[in-house]
Amino acid sequence: MAGIERSAPVRRRTFGNTVGFALSLFLLVSPAVLVFIWMISLSLKNELDNTSFPPVFIPSPPTFDNFIEVFAKNNFLLYFWNSVLVTGGAVLIGLLVGVPAGYGIARAKAAKTAVLILIARMTPALSYLIPLFLLFQWLGLVGTVTALLITHLVITIPIIVWIMIGYFEGIPQELEDAAYVDGATLWQSFRYIAMPLARPGMVVAAILAFIFSWNNFVFSIVLGGKNSRTLPSAVYNSLTFEQISWGPLAAAALLVTLPVLVLTVVAQRQIVAGLSAGGLKDG
Image (cartoon, rainbow, N blue to C red; front, side, top):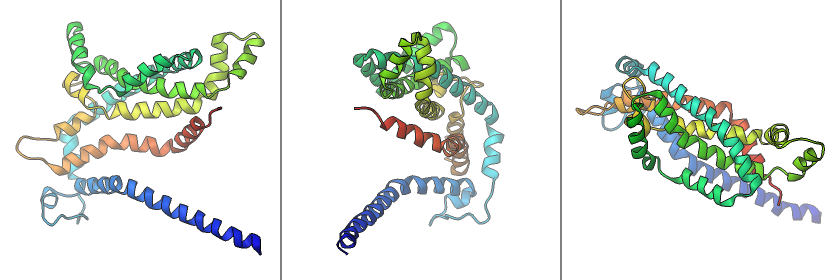
């Protein structure tokens, strides 16, 4: 009986913690969810309903004219393909450079280099824009996909390197020392021991780098040309000087957000597993 009586407060605390966590999660997530739902509502209404007061939340009937207008007035498929080339190439090159760099920094215990990587990650993208623009103007690359891909490396490489440093630091050095005793080289130790163990970190790093690169807007507007802009430019092109067309603007924003949303939903298990693995480090 005493054991049952003692367990009751524990159950109450557990229930209270669960309710508190659920309320906190709701307060944090609900603003973003409501904004996203409102954006869907705007994209499915005509301009009369979008500008009416009081606001009309549920479209009756819903219309897809805003999505049709986005594709009619913008070369949306070209922008989408440019985004795939720029973001995909930047993430791929970022992994090829960032994973070995993260491994080298972690094993060399180069704390100062890691701080430099963090500073490069925290520095606003606008800080790189003017020197990169002058460089690409001198090279004749302004308005090309190549210029956008190179600039997006400023986004992807610091993210990947910083995340991989933490994952490689969490891998016990003893595993690689045992491989060296068996005659493995440094490259073999990295290829067959460190990389497989750090695969969850590589997935998380690639996804985060993809999201930040895909959503980048400034580089595309300044360095992109008429035929080389990325998908976020479609949102900008939906704005006019006469008025703001909320329906097409919301439709374009949804189309830009859709690939990132699908990727996050599909890879949510890998993201959780990667973040969980990154939190388990030896003391």
